[in-house]
Length: 531
Image 1 (cartoon, rainbow, N blue to C red):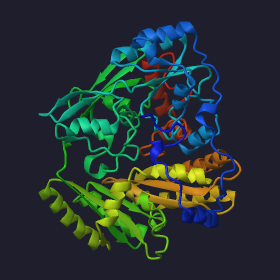
Image 2 (tube, rainbow, N blue to C red; image 1 turned 90 degrees about the vertical axis):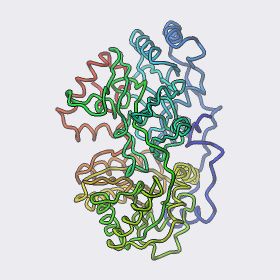
Image 3 (cartoon, rainbow, N blue to C red; image 1 turned 180 degrees about the horizontal axis):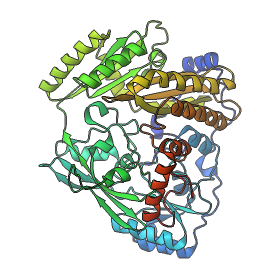
Image 4 (tube, rainbow, N blue to C red; image 1 turned 120 degrees about the vertical axis):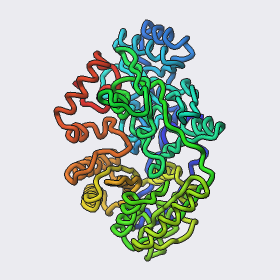
């Protein structure tokens, strides 16, 4: 099944907002109903593909025939941009400015190399396309002329499972649920469950340094990766002979987070773990965000560490965003405080032990156990928030997210700075926006902050959000945060990433790109500023 072309996920799961919620949006945020419906797919005017016949035949030869090179309007539209709110607003308006010239579907590493060779010969840029879930402009290169979307869906196999070493080698186009199903047949799991889980791919996880909602227990995806194979215009790069090595800088780290700018990931070897026998999620309430953050820090630094650990601020708790299938259920509560979701996965013995130890820490920090219902409700609805965003957009609201991370000592200042920047920038539409935040991932030395914003769209929703995003990015850098914790750089964060990395750091990365991609064909303008 293809993802909704101008929204998120499965079209059958889209649900309109209840009248009570639309009424609150109108009263509290000044949201007005949309004046125009989204342009239907069949009515979008897509210019003819600029791909000439000679280039098309070269691409067809690379992937085994014409059936794996698509230039029809629907295929090209479905590979236009990603799933950020500006992306969706442009798609709903029928804007096809970033449409690829062709969609090419290789089935093997050798075919990817052949496609890269054909693109180099015909001056075509290329952007790898996995699940299409980018929310930072990672699928819209800044290049004039045609580019190819390299759809990796045919590269969707489990290549190897080493049960002695507990490693699995997966192809990049394998979607996360399919990977989990293949591993579960043998009793294993990756334990990687980001909000994009239902649609994102293995290659995309590695290319963007993804982080899943159970990262406190399983780690980030880049911590799971043991080896990668990269197809580049200059040849093949194989990384990862052993789980750890002192043989120079780790090239795996160079590939992870490269977002297609250095090459196309064609296989990923990852650590796997036994499927947990027990999963338990529960809710804890704290009187303030500061109090709850201190409790999470204690667990992250001194243990016992839960598998899932996240904390909503007062606003997000009041709205009920930690429970996406019950938005607004807490609005009547004035004593909502801050809700922490704490989850444990593993054996019965290990889970019981960690749960008891964590409870002692949480109580000592002022937490009150509110039972398993909030945690189980979060687990049930944790992939629903993007569908809610679609419903909010349809109702005329602007809804978007951004995230960052910093050291524990800087969390309060970063939290305040970003919240104030978003509030100030978005109040221009009339009524002040709703700005919510939660700590989504924790580490011994720091944590990530994930902000969700809902406001009126204003006269120009894309421009309105762009101003707010820029203000938030400036606040993040000024407060000592990183420009992205797990969404990636893309084109949206690129200019701030260049400031974070510094001129010398960017020049070092440019040197890598010149070695692996001398003609600059791969994802131009993504990750690195264009030469």
